[in-house]
Image (cartoon, rainbow, N blue to C red):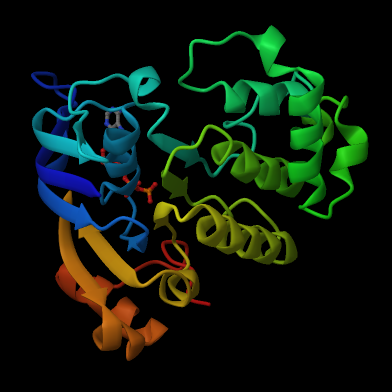
Length: 265
Ligand SMILES: Nc1ncnc2c1ncn2[C@@H]1O[C@H](COP(=O)(O)OP(=O)(O)OP(=O)(O)O)[C@@H](O)[C@H]1O
């Protein structure tokens, strides 16, 4: 289970650029739930994922992941509990290392283990098997550098990497936004199958209203650093993309969204 209680995050406190990104944010997520997270630019979505991953330390409140209070724990100390995939395919992996080396690093995440033992023959075979499951032919390119791959291939590998260290929480930060539609669909199908296979508790930030309703079983909307909408079950099942757009308009005090703010389709 994930519990965020009374979370406040203020950036640049005491400076002219002070910004309260999260304020009194409460959210509890059951094990194995897949939650989609929406909200307009600057609503606090990435900051909330950062608070869970440990990149951002909450100024107020408490963060519990899998029964552990991680509020003050740094990213490395939470690495066994949480995996994250970013929008930019270049962020989650190291371009100068090979596919195999990236997988070895991901598998060793949060463990006090070096590179050497991580690359035993058995591990190599396991990595190749996991990569061949993608059906992208990358199992034949395990020695190629990560920066020789396309964005979609890297994102697919990032998802596999996110499942290698055994963490049960997966944070997806607009992880298909930089991909072409075909690759985005492939990566979403892969996401769903990995979430099912590993029974992951998943938070997916998306600007695509279609994705927000089509995936997972609960949708949360953030605005000004708080949860302003939280829907599941029939209430969610009956929602259309247009309803979400209308809710966006309402929380913004009737202000229309510019076309770039949301992906309607
Ligand atoms: N490191 C930082 N330093 C200062 N301000 C920050 C920092 N990170 C985020 N912010 C500010 O906090 C607010 C919330 O940002 P955040 O990135 O969480 O929003 P978001 O909902 O993910 O937006 P987007 O959809 O545009 O990615 C914004 O006003 C942003 O400018």
